[in-house]
Amino acid sequence: MAISSDHTPPHILVAGCGSLGGTVASDLTDIGEVWGIRRTASAIPRGVHPAPADLLDRAGLARAVPEAPDIILYCLTPSTYDDAGYRGAYVDGLANLLAVTDTSNLKRLFFISSTSVYGQDDDSEVDELSPVAPRRFSGERVLEGERLALDSGVPATVIRFSGIYGPGRGRFLDAVRNGELNPDSPGPYTNRIHEDDAAAVCVHLIGKALAGVELDTCYLATDCEPARLDDVVAWIREQVPCQPPGPDGRRGGRGGSKRCRNQRLLDTGFEFTYPDYRAGYQPMIRALRAG
Image (cartoon, rainbow, N blue to C red; front, side, top):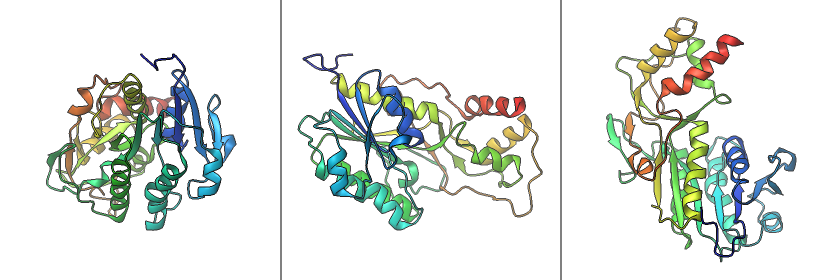
């Protein structure tokens, strides 16, 4: 990979070193100097330069950001799950970061978004060109952050992730095992991506940007098999002992019913480790059996 004309390692800023952002930051240390923004310095992964700051504290943020990064990955989750929390994470924090960062060397800003910006509920297929009409305030704030990134005057790419799952994100698997889901049949279409693949998508696209490859302004990052909720639940019940579903078990999904299409991402050469839910949940289920 061509890093830069003078062979100096690129400077990469990861704003938000939580579960996903921290993994990406660690992986990026192989290709550049990486700084990680998080309120608690001790929670920033080893090998990543700590930039402890609160993204809602513009003055403190200005003291923490590195000089003229080549890449910014903005990867925030709300501190509270209300409108104010989402606005702070997806809109105000990004506005503060852009206001205090020297973007003169910036090759690309990557904004981590969500398929919650789509409102389709008719089993239709959606891609990067499909209409967006969020069903909840959370999706509205995520979409507001997307537009802020894309209208910021710097090269920007939005990555819309579907539901991220993995070893540290087993809430859905636990809900099935505990009998908390009793989906209708046929159930709504659901879309997901394993956390390892989600991190790999970020590293892949950042590598492309550093190599000078022209990127689109939006990628839909989801695995290769949208699946109906009842099919996923039935398959899990075949793999691991589960409580029978209770009468008040959740019958539908929370994100409408749509089939997310990842062809634009595949066209960049990205390859999934876990191309469908069976491949992704099997290691988690094996771990449950072993434990």
